[in-house]
Image 1: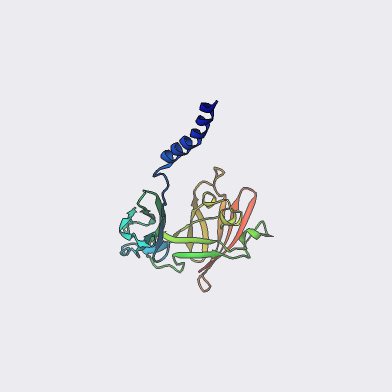
Image 2: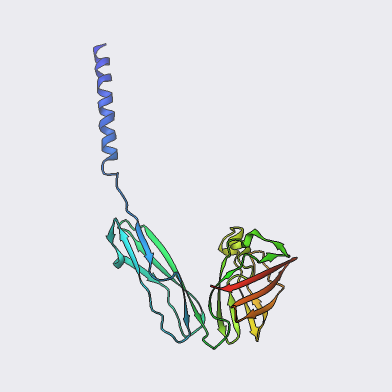
Length: 229
């Protein structure tokens, strides 16, 4: 009987000792990098011009870690297009923090329609009805790819991408032609519903830097008023 009581006294001590051995050295604090791009997250550069990297800063546990940032991607200023630069800062434990910059290389042929950022006015609508989807005035990128031909980042004007919060996949880009003051559709990429726009036409007012576009898709007409920022 005495031996049985003695064993009960030993068991808690043994269990505690084993627990300490299993957790020894497991606890550790990880500090993630803070990464910030200098300049704009999107830049417009003319063909033939030099792309100048604005730079970036990174810190880990309040210590400068900018030297550890890895930049991937290139910008070819000899050809119009969208170029993406990716910046990755790894902390001491190998966990990454990522930021991206888009560089739009545009054709510098003189045009009344400037390459740059535009906003979609809240007065825009779908099928003539007031559309709260445009209340936030989504931002579009427009740039000249060749003389008189312009890339538009979303022919829906941000209706689905921003207004309904569907995300980047619902920003459907296309190209339009400017002939004097008239605008017309050249082509578009496939929408998320695996089809393309039926039409797009309108006018451009150089004095107010405003595009007025009626974009046809399925049974809808997206009436867009797009103004230079």
